[in-house]
Length: 267
Length: 267
Image 1 (spheres, each protein chain N blue to C red):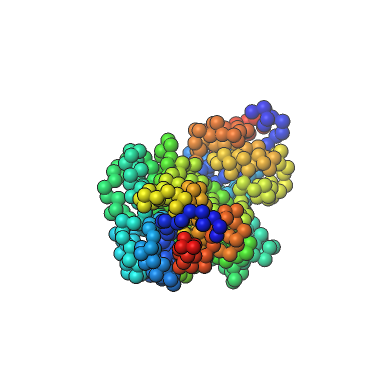
Image 2: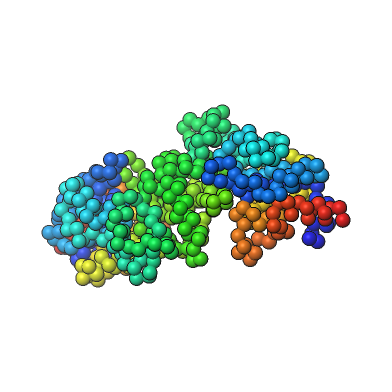
């Protein structure tokens, strides 16, 4: 914990799935014990933003889901890939073919999709059919410079019932087949973490990232100059103790992480 | 053609899809002009085996399909991954979880599938659902030494309507997510080509492989010491002219390849 004592931690970045709650088959999710209280404490005693690669719901949908689980969160504090992706697509004159979950389509109505010159991939879950994958593949094969814009890049994530394949694995299949360039929007890209840090008007050395994915959350944060705190919930695996990425702190869960860091702040 | 003059070609290995016929949406396929005649000429004047990674039909199904297209082929001359895979599974006490096309399942009834210790992947097409991919992923995650046995490893193949994602891309997704070991049964493995060569009781330098995939067919054959003839049908792409793999001969199609090689034999 010595590293945490150098600078007072003034802002917290929290991953959502696997840190606040675990997803479940029915889509409702299960709160991870202590997380609701931890978030309330952060709103009282510090600053907080939620940095998530969630891409089956829009901002309002995700805010509603978290509210249903008991979290009291300002929706504008959710940093999600969709908004960043839309900005990126417009700025680069990209017209995407969509390989996304049906729920996300109406959030993309305001993006030109005629004569697609890239494929936008989000976690489509049951909409990752062979037909949908193949259509995306065929678009990519028709492009001189095939480009995939991906909402996140996780290999898998954890729901209450177990591990599940995430968007990154399907992007890998398309990239392998087409040699497409892949632009990842979301964690672990530095710019995505920075948009959350800047939103709090803080510096990277005043902030910690708390997440369950050692590569996307911890490695990504550290690469952006932000301390990374690994929680042993969500997709945590004990073999990560030997991972080449070394968290700045490992805590049992979000509540413990928050308690330790705030206690350290006050000492 | 100088290389072909050193040894008389005594046996032909032919790829099937993209060389004899192109697949089509209705599953019936379209004969590539001249191929029926070329196969008949080879049966009259040489020896021939069909070396294919086809894995949605069993041997009888594939033989029937080719017969319907007008090809007169001895079914025992079809060298398919399924038989080799079953031998491999039994020899290594492997009990597969199946991620294969529904048509192939009853051809695997005689393989123990209790308490799976590997995943067998074939080209499942519409059966590559998220649910099926995820079940295979979860089995792999539960294994201490995750193993994928794959019937072929093509990135994509060509049907009459265009390019389509093949089994290799889906295997790549699972491998990326789980770091599983992958054993490929079929082209381009040396042992698969050798089983066809040995079936004709020939030596590798007496044989040519004719195919449309520069990596799987041409590269695979050359790696086994067999000359590789690229046809410009099926999945052929003009940019392969600059590919690091250099075919021993490039022909417009199967008929031209056979005519050139047999003419060269007689000169």
